[in-house]
Length: 118
Image 1: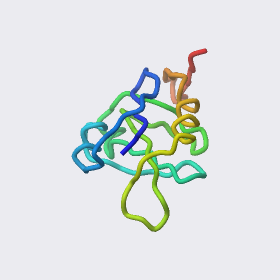
Image 2: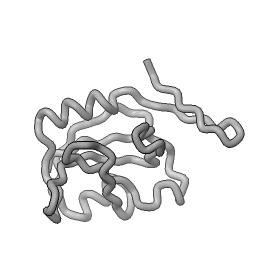
Image 3: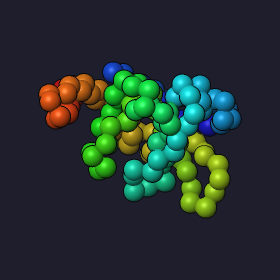
Image 4: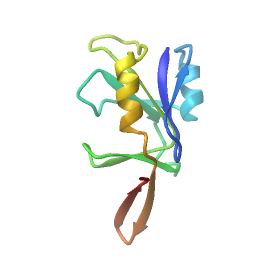
């Protein structure tokens, strides 16, 4: 399965995995959670306990005003299907560009400041 892996402080990397639960858990470092923050059929798979275990903040999801903590990956998820599948060429390119710039986070009181590399 062709996925796009996004680690904190790094640019996205295309990777082939076997699609097993174990291979997905290995990428995120624990139990997985699928979220669907985009308008297309792309799922963001992250560590289910990333925020609770204080994994490093990775990328801001501006559409949801939320931060993904820890390493995550993107794959294709079609409606009404139980399995995840490979990203298309267009999706790989689209999401490489979307997450190309790394982000740094800083808390000032109760405010979270997000700085994106140029």
